[in-house]
Length: 285
Image (cartoon, rainbow, N blue to C red; front, side, top):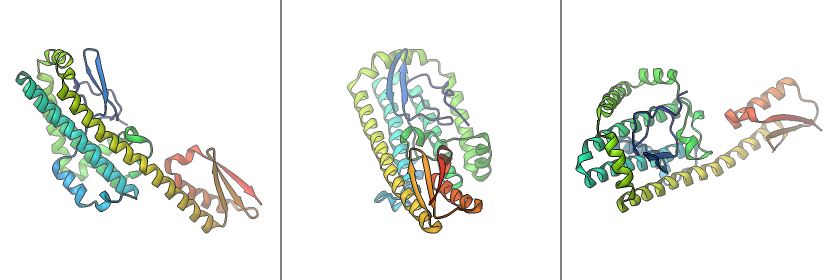
């Protein structure tokens, strides 16, 4: 699994390392001045077009895949807008930093595209690693391994080209000599400007919309869980109650090991990875 801490290439408030673990909250920092906000990600216009084309769900999202696609599209679009807006603001405010702003924007958008490609891959091949019900942070921080990288590279030739482009941009980024000067300017000038505060506020509003969408998915998930439990009650003729991380299964008479195994398998499908957090209690009437 890739983890946070590999953001070494960012030296300023643009910081975002899409190829590693994402945080829902990015730290915008410059020589000790820290601003907290959502880390940026995005979809390219083409990818967004595909998401919208395949997703009538934008009017009514009521399934796991629908909510996942809609949340990712909103999350990524907001972050892409932040990156483009910040780069434009830097250039407009002081043209001396145009090169840094341009390289950072392009690098971050490439990281965003990489993260989106990984998201699509997991949604198709291992969607249980995409968590909708624990907020933006866990939604963004899906697990990704070296084995996943090998698999996506084999299945998606464009991913290889994307990796090459990221490497080229990282090299350019590391060669920039104006970072110390830029950090001071950002801290003392840009971060105090009204335009910057407006841009940041707009971005946070969009991120809140994603948080609200994912919060709504928790309600949908709860309803779906109850429907699945009702189906288990019907299929096996048992009583199922969930209390304080205990799943109480009541049977009319002594159930065989095979029957209990089948019931546990069905419950496992309902709760997925969270199943290990529950204790099965078998009650006999």
